[in-house]
Image (cartoon, helix red, strand yellow):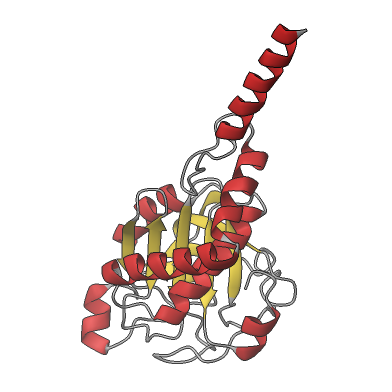
Length: 246
């Protein structure tokens, strides 16, 4: 009986020590993805830890992608926290499009959350009816020829009239959930890129798609395909106050 009690005490002590272990927010799940993701994400979404994490990550991204606003970075990271908590993140990759910036700025950024590195910081078009150099109007309606705000998940790759393209699924009802029906995609366009931006002070406009230059589209698609998060930002009060991701 003494040996049994001794063994039980030793086992309890081992469990107690294991319970103090640190679970990294950036670590890959080993055996049970949904459980590990939920536990890891709670470290970054609770109280002071969440605020510290958000401030740190905003600083890291801002130092590498200086053309993005802090508001866009914070919104993107906040949405990423929520998506990760819900098990939506699969590749620890975050794309932010900052529509508060002119299209003449490099306002698209892809951040590798695991390795803490900006992989892309480039030009992207907005819809022709969203505005000229600056987008100020957004829509979820078909035939609006406007960009949509909010949180998206990348979907399938296909070969279309613009060549290799990447569909996105809108995750916010009433904000961007018509993205699939509207054929809102990442595709290449000759009216986007450094030369166009320098010559005109802005890039051309799409019909609502996230158009990038032809040299960028393939590596971009290869990086963000496979259910990664895309956050299209603008300081729109309605979206910021009603989004379930923010």
